[in-house]
Image (tube, rainbow, N blue to C red; front, side, top):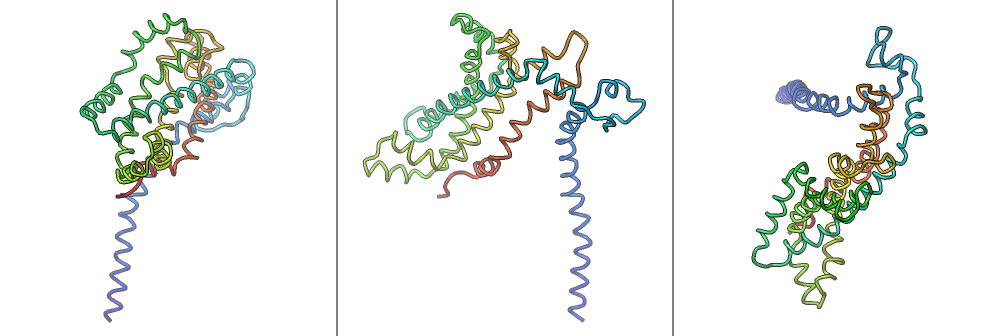
Length: 292
């Protein structure tokens, strides 16, 4: 009898918990996935619709494709400078990310691992520098770019992007370096290791997830940057994807929606692929390096 009552209670708990899971877990996840994936779905179906189907929705649904076509991708890849924009974006993003990571590793290590007066103040100042809007900084940076004769070149973007990447990456790595036990560094100092050897052989191998996390953020910010690229680049062959798609595929008040969506979709794929490859390292970087 007692077992029967226990089984019934377990069954009732199952009936109660299942609707609760639907409301508290599955439904919010479904809404989140819809909001997250619907823009990609819209870009995908718009990029494979013909112009007649795009502008005449009376014979079909705007959420589906009746006669798919690749004419917009052909126009984008072979009749515009999109391959050059893609290459420029890759080069600028990779170079600026590596420059920022190199400077951020040195700055974060010096602030967090070297004990000196004013380290916390310097760290706070770097974080506050990240909060300065790029729309304020691009005016003095534009003057410096003109003075060094780098206007309308990829070097202008490679050297200006670190101005907002280094503060963010430094702040991120400071928190990660702080989670590494000081005892490891003290043991290495006792054994005669230099600060550079400690950084290269001990700190950096333990901080690989943090470096990957900072690199992903830096690469994403560089890839999607708009204001500096719009200000410092004017020729079509030197533009990046965010600027080229907006300025070259829009003629006055005429929006070429097919190529626009195809360019936006192709431009978002590298970042999505990068996240998919390093998502485990990115998640592990949120929990710290080595437990005490």
